[in-house]
Amino acid sequence: MSQSALPAVFMRGGTSKGLFFHRRDLPAAEAEWDALFLAALGSPDPHGRQLDGMGGGISSLSKVVVVSPSARPGVDVDYLFGQVAVDRALVDYRSNCGNLTAAVGHFAVDEGLVRPADGEAVLTLHNCNLDQRIEARFPVADGRAAVEGETVLDGVAGRGAPIRLSFLEPGGAVTGRLLPTGRARDVLDVPDSGPIEASLVDASTALVVVRAGDLGLQGVEAPDAIEADAALGERLEAIRRAAAAAMGIAPESESVPKVGFVAPPADAGTLSGARLAADEVDLTARAISMGRPHRALPLTAALALAAAARIPGSLAAEAARPAGGDDRAPVRLGHPSGVAEVAVELAAAAPPSLARLGVTRTARRLMEGRVLVPADRTATTEGARRSGKAD
Figure 1 (cartoon, helix red, strand yellow):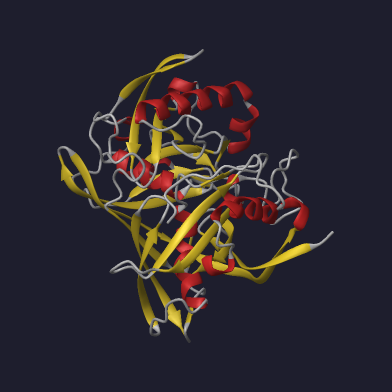
Figure 2 (cartoon, rainbow, N blue to C red):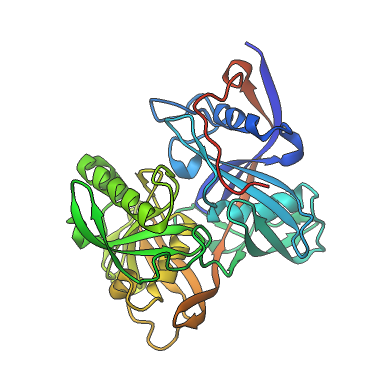
């Protein structure tokens, strides 16, 4: 069997991993990309393991990013994110990946797309999926992105150099409005389940927030326990689809909206075996992405949850510890792997609008070279689906 070889870099960004490509190395016809990405990651795999590719069998480890220099004024780099389904021939471009955004600047510097001086690089990134701008600040040493540092990221072993991301004016990234229905909470009529109160928020991604208690949960459940409950999974998907319809998003868009369920701060265990005390968090949260519970929080979901926690009347604000008058204090989100801190800067309180959302991540280049793609896997794109704002 013949194989094609594509230049690629395998990178970790935050709590995700994915394959990074130069746009120049991909076919000019974008319709051919899906088949390449599916074959490179090992999808579709009915066994859910992606053993015949670079994917890791879960949504956070089954991703691609396409990077190119930008011709846009004030922008250094353009990038397009693709979420590759594990068990289906689907590449979804309807959302961004906040975690892999942290690795885009590293890729651009190490690949020579930009050449900042040693010290702190400040790059402006343009996400083509959502027409969104992100500022990335990170250290550069000897002309390459620094990876050694003292920053600890819950869910990632070891330490790394800090990458400070600012998502600029992130409200309405998917739907055009921070509150797509104009309200901080709605009642969704969910088929075969009945009405449920929800907050529909669009801040870097579209998210539906519900109370853990309304699902019969405490909010501190481990991902494996959530995934083992098939009836719960079906209900969460029904909630997601009802929320999509209410937000004006096609219900079959699997990557958006994401689903988050929240509870007040509580003592909880983490996947590392450590204990998380209630006073270490402001809001307890769990998230569902591409139909599966996330082992930390998708970064875009964390951004939207933190924004929701600062919007009066939302279910997240209802469950969150009060800010105590300091609206600039980070929102500390308790998740299965620990805590995620998100800085929320409101541009206005009524109606609410966002100036920026800020987080600190780490990233590392893991492997560079060429990814091999079997020719018989790329002969057709049948079953693959492209959508989004790529340009």
